[in-house]
Length: 386
Image 1 (tube, rainbow, N blue to C red):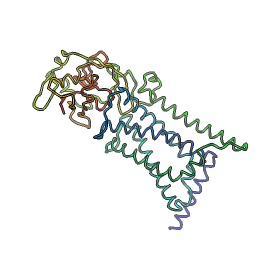
Image 2: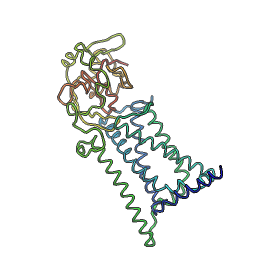
Image 3: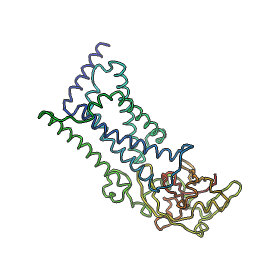
Image 4: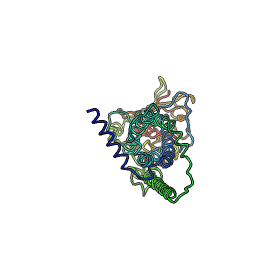
């Protein structure tokens, strides 16, 4: 039986390897496509780290409230390059496909390391890109935390990629630069390779343009794949988490609602009418979500620092906001002092010249510069000095 299985595997691998005879299955093509994929993955990795550590900051991490559009640019780039990685990864796998079925499978330590790194890279990349794409559509058909698994898969991808590059470095170096074609056949191969790479780049570009419209209003009409478009929703602003999903309709519409502002033993209650009677500030800030969509909006309300000062807070102190929503991972958010005392950080009551819709966080929500949308807490119940 063992001999038969060995014979059968050799036959299958030999057939698979011999079924792909195109001259594009070459080291040079693999290197060219690999460079593009590497740039896309590295861009995705670092923009993803930025998003992750905005939500789970390190103790020594600086807080950047400026520029106000930085997270919008970073996360939009993260999602767009992630989408572009899909055709690039498929192209890379196609160029090296015959090598995946070389026999014997392992010929030594170097071969074993190469095979293991490829298997780890391909498996984790497919899972990472698939999960990321489903996250754009807010569909989570798995029982674990998307953000944590997405974060650690990124490290696995980068680690396996570094190992693979280390093993294949001599081959990469040998084919990094194109050789001048000396014969008609070599010129034909070069032309085919350029056409192939051009087609892959064009496919990635089309996916990018038809996805990035969820963040760039001018490209909204060609937003074919992203689920949100700028200008749609209450007050011409898209909605991510709805009031029905948050189950907050009753407490948010309660006439007795009041915002608690707490500093140790001192608590002050501000009704909606009292908040509106205070000096109002209007700012233009983007709402930018991890799914890659973003849009500028005009927010009106009371500066957080004015409320904190009314309970005797010190400008060196941070704050925390809590939502009327009691279930889920984002029922509140830390507000570092760099945000809490920033002139652009508001307890927002209006958006785009209208009172907040229930879907946008009525009766009051937090809005601050350069923060992920999940940290711009809606349906506020309290603001507490920390």
